[in-house]
Image 1 (cartoon, rainbow over the protein chains, first blue to last red):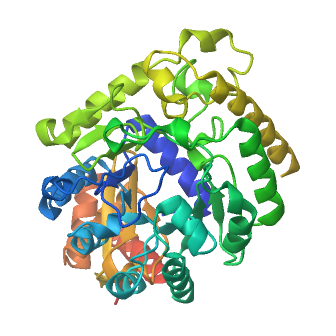
Image 2 (image 1 turned 135 degrees about the vertical axis):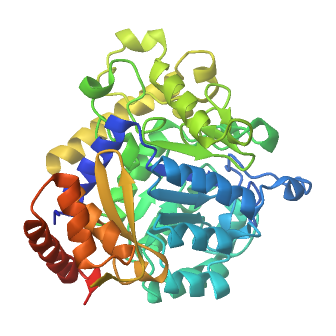
Length: 364
Length: 88
């Protein structure tokens, strides 16, 4: 029996999972439906017929039980808005009854009533709530709905209830006029805030295009600089845990050159609302995907892992000046990745993000 | 000597981990890693087996003396008690 610091446990746990190819972290995109209509969302669908095509609670539970048998320890429930899935509460209880650490990504609109009561009794491991504005006007500009007061009230209630709250900010051109105010508003909660500057290319059937809401590298660096000043203690970052070079998913010596260096497809996978497994949530399904409803989770995971391990960065990366620092990721390179190329704008951003990451590490 | 309600032993290749379940998640935020011997003891006690039966299983599995096995079970159970996993 060992009593060890959590950080050491996490490191040992992930190394063990990597060694044995255990999918310990799984994301479930329960629905593409949402009660907001964010202009930069990569998944939200408005077709009402989608409601009839959602996987039922029983179907999701069957998929989750199969993932549990493979060694899943943590489940992320997301969407769309996960809380709008008709069987959300049953799914949540089922997972926690099996001892799975459940995290939730939400827009906060429904974080009240029955949901808050349930989370008081059985707290999620992490409750990530997206903040889209600092007043009704900014909320309407980004999400199409003036629901600032509702979200604000729910966030404060969640904080009072001692929820493991974390705020997420996803800047886009639509948010820019209010950026500083939004960062200050998020900072007023005194909880960890993450600034996600990597916007994903929306799925084709959403009708949205990244070019309509994307930011330039200069804008992104300005936002991160602002976040560092306004949220110095909140751990705000342009990089998610997975994206820190060679930290979480394993170093180049462990995994190999020119390959994906994050945990996707090695110790984690995601299942979309249609039952399609991919190495992670936003991973281009044209590159790697398997239908778990047809093949079952175990077979799909085997195939996803094999294809992920075989995946190589584009040939142009091999001679690139930042290749040792860059965490190449098809999500970041969008349509270019589908043609086995890099998006030059993303390479420029990566270069600057890596410099920033190094500076921060040196300071730490 | 029993394991409390609200815990599950997860066995994955290379690791045995005890996790809280359901409403116990609010009270017990840690995960506990067990070696194979402690995991066997945890599992048998959770199945409602007596200390004698657990010691028997341990002695049989590892080819050790039954008295020695009983001492091991008592010692590990003491750890479970301290960690809040078990009750007398």
